Length: 77
Image (cartoon, rainbow, N blue to C red):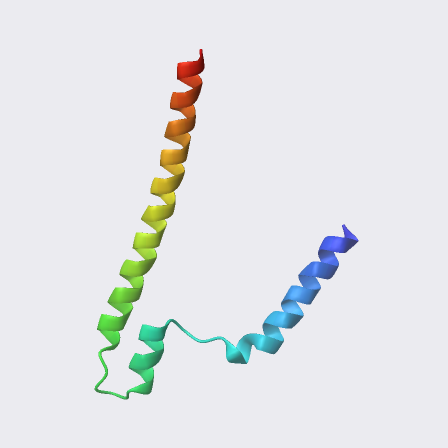
């Protein structure tokens, strides 16, 4: 239990120290640095679409893995 507490404290300290260097996704970062004429809405749209696409890819891959494993076990019986 103390081991996990030590890791948790270490992660919290590292998060506080390195929080300054953390940046947003490239689309959001560029839209804020370009000034008021930047298309912030467009950059948010692309980042949201990318996140949804990755989510669906992971769920689809996991579903395919489960489906193939179930199919293999049915063929062996």
